Length: 239
Image (tube, rainbow, N blue to C red; front, top):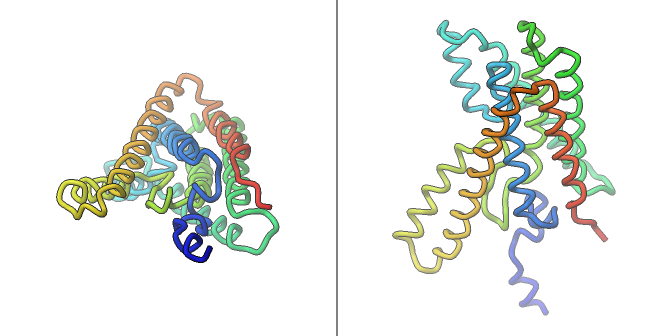
C-alpha cells in the first residue's frame, strides 16, 4: 500500500496542475489557450495592445516611449492590470476556503471577463480612443492575469495559459532532450512536446478567430466569457 501511494505522480497533490483540478484536462488546456489567443488578437487589433501577451506589451511600451507606437499607454495599462489580476487572484486561490482553488480562480477569471465584456459594450469597444481604450486594455489584462493563475502544469509538465514564449523555450528543450538526452527521459520529453504543440496550436487558432471576430467587436469579450464559464462543468468535485 505504501509503495503504491509513493508511486503516484506528484501532480495528484499539486493544486496548480490541471490534471488534479479538472476533468478532461487536455480539453481545458486547449480551451483556455485558445480563448487567450482569441481575446489577445482582438485586443491588439482593436486597442493596439495585448491583454495576454505581456512580453509583447513590454516591447510595445518601449517602442512607444521611443515615439514609434502611439498606443503605448494601452500596453502599460494592460501590463499593470495583468500583474494586479495575477496577484489578487493568487491570494484568493491561496486563502482557506471550502471551495477548491480551481473553482475560485475560474470564478474570478469569469467575473473579470464579464466586467471587461460589459465595459466593451458601454465604451463601444474603444472606438473613441483615449482613456476608453486604456481602460478596456486594462480590464482585459486583469482578466487574463486572473486566468493565468488557473493552472501552471499539465501532468507535472510546465504549461502556460496566457503567454507562450516559455512554451516555445520549453519545446526546444524537450526536442533536444528527445534527440540527445538519456533514454529514461525521452517518454517525458515526448509528452512535453505534445503539450507544447497543443498549446501553441490552440493559441494560434484562437488568434485567427479573434482576428476574424473584428467584424463584430462589441461581443468578442462576451464570447470569451461564455466559453470560460463552461469550464465550471469540468472542475473536479472534492469529496
